[in-house]
Amino acid sequence: MSQTRDKEHDPFDAVLDLEEGFFQEGYELGLADGERAGRIEGRAFGLEKGFEKYIAMGRLHGRAQVWAGSLNDMDETNKVQEIAHEVKDSSSQHHVREPSGASSQVSVTPSSARLHSHVRTLFALTEPSSLSVENTEDSVSDFDHRLKRAEGKVKVIEKLKDAVNPYVKPHSERDSSHLGQKVKREGSIEDIRALNLPR
Image (cartoon, rainbow, N blue to C red):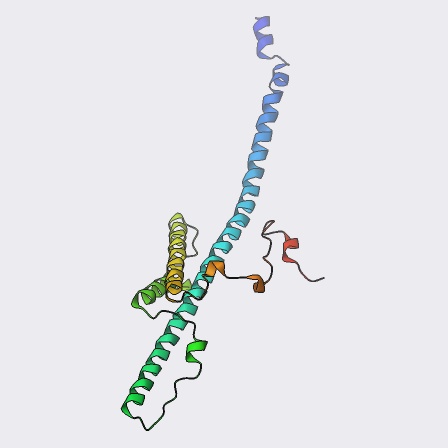
């Protein structure tokens, strides 16, 4: 009886279980701290990546607006020139001047139905009011799909423009040295040194 009592109330049992107790305590503390730090770091990383994606989409939307404007300008210039030629043919007494610098001010953009449809599609894909800012799996995959389609449309539009005007260099071959140096994309979103603030 005394031997069984000693085994039940052995004072060294707590010492032998000390390592396991410390391990469990450290695991629980590390898990709680990791969850907290993971949420903070994950949120910062998500904001950074989301910001980069929306900048890319905004840049594509700006290009779509410029192309849509140049197509409209080109259509208006073509209409004015057609009217001027009609008037010139109908009355040889009155000299009608063509719009000054119309061909030099407006960039040579092919006024084709195919190009119009591509620009319209690009504009619709990148329209800010139609983009979702929700952080759900469906909205993120939809945004990524639209961004890829918009990038593809930009390549098609550039090819169509370059095919019509062989004297203009393609967008990828243009010299961008006049735009200044590229900003280094090193560091994280919290790194204030990357902003190069004036002192």
